[in-house]
Image 1: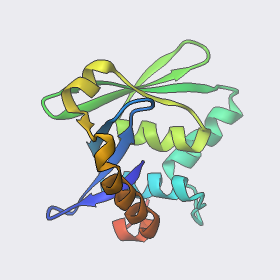
Image 2 (image 1 turned 180 degrees about the vertical axis):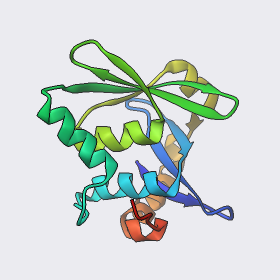
Image 3 (image 1 turned 60 degrees about the vertical axis):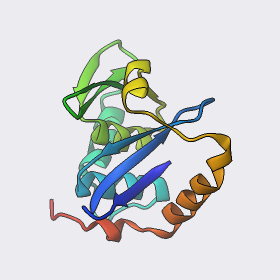
Amino acid sequence: MGVRVEMPSNQPIVLLREVGGDRYLPIWIGPGEATAIAFAQQGMAPARPLTHDLFKDVLEAVGQELTEVRITDLREGVFYAELVFASGVEVSARPSDAIALALRTGTPIFGSDGVLDDAGIAIPDEQEDEVEKFREFLDQISPEDFGTSSQ
């Protein structure tokens, strides 16, 4: 769905939506990752490549394909993810980094049933107007709303 800033803490979150269901998965992330995700969603290319752009370029250079991203676990308020490659190799990653990379490579993102059961928020069809308002909000924000770091 996108990135938003949770008020009043000003903490960015990324919101994933269940395909074929009514659950949403909010994951709190850092401002740098929020910027990276927002850039990818808006199709913006920064003047200098971000870490996720570099990782995508390295994968292409070495001929590796990222086939899926999995949000695998939630322990003590911390989400965990895995990058799954065509070669069968799986690499542990922070969900925010995995999502930023998936958006750049067109890779599907999957949440485990356990994570969705534990942290998913159901929004029934009658609340779809609220979801549409959220989408409109996401369309109006820019990566600059999250600040950037000089990396």
